[in-house]
Image (spheres, rainbow, N blue to C red):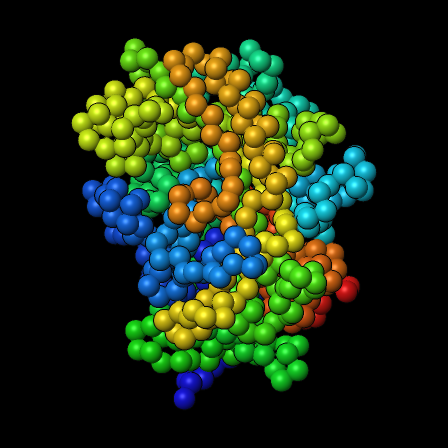
Length: 590
């Protein structure tokens, strides 16, 4: 029999950036809050300290900070007519686990989306006509605009202490920043990173070709910084251990280094770890949530936590899975196009260009940081004319220096033996003389890309696994070929001895790593026929359930999603604080 606990006002499912932001915004209220985290508690000290945190084998290869697939995984297939099989090893994406989630092991690239990203359907129809976009694409508007989110972007960037140089402050375009960005109210709180050598070579070549390079907005501290919550961060040591690692120096913005220290001191917030939520409990009519049920992973005891408000703040694809398991909303059917839960799952479309230099060019990429990069945005979104290209969307092109760690980084040119003495000689020759450009492209929503429950496979708690159906639409493959060709032109001007282009090709595979930018499945929008949530992340079907994070994205933009995830959390917190908690009910007309 389940153990029933005293009722609280708000329960969070998952405690990372978004839960911490909303809980902090409600700090001065009488609202009682519980955060349920299925993993364990952890903090910078002692959990992320060197030398153990610099164990590349444990954390980069064996994924020590990531989800345990022996307990819960996803099944995958490319198309609806295939049988999905369980993903037994992490590969293409790396969901985090334990307190702080994926915000612990991210790199720190902190871009804002453009207004055209929030109006993708409307923007393209207005510029190119209603029939321009491929019929298989189900991209749509978000139901809000960049102007709605701008003050919340600003708050998140100052919370994280982002280092960068704004290209558009109050409508004034400033050389040295991103000339394509929408207006922002003020500059970043910290100066930009200094370019790495590869970035300097890229910037010179890009400018010679007429582009406008700038430094990637970075959550790796460029100087000591105390954020508006009074939490101090320290300068980045450029050690090269950001992605897949926690930061021992308090130099990378994560929930642990920006917000959790103060949230965990709030009298109206309780963190409960080892709590694996298995469903949202609904009333008999399925129109209202009465709380959640979870399993205490240490004892196996099923526990019910009654609550007036349920906030699904876990990793992106866990949120729609929990909605499906709980019977919230109608599951999406790709055959009919009906239903909304699981609709518009999207990802990222990645290409690259590799540059092999002569031995007199020392790139020293082992001195890196997660967001140390020089970038151009000329081919992002609709920043360039698509009228004769046969696709929509785009990519940014960036020269990143994130850390050439010895186990993972072993570049060799085409024709090198795959093992043995020849391979070893080639790695030694090219290790410090090889760089790359990343072609970081958007992912367009497609009718047959979606999330559902697997009919065959179950997790350690006896529940159906999430089934992921995804392949790159032809639109995005065309886009990748086009922008990778532009990146190749820049690379050829950078003076490398050999340049190798790697545009994205299909079919999509879950084996090689790409990004952890999984989006969609509980998307937001202006009406309940095409979206699971309204523009505030509130379920159309169960008004006291809210969803946070990238699950809300109707499609994914070229830029990294974290800045938008944080801005949306502040946007939602404002609506909860000023409207919902004063008068519970739908925040948008259906």
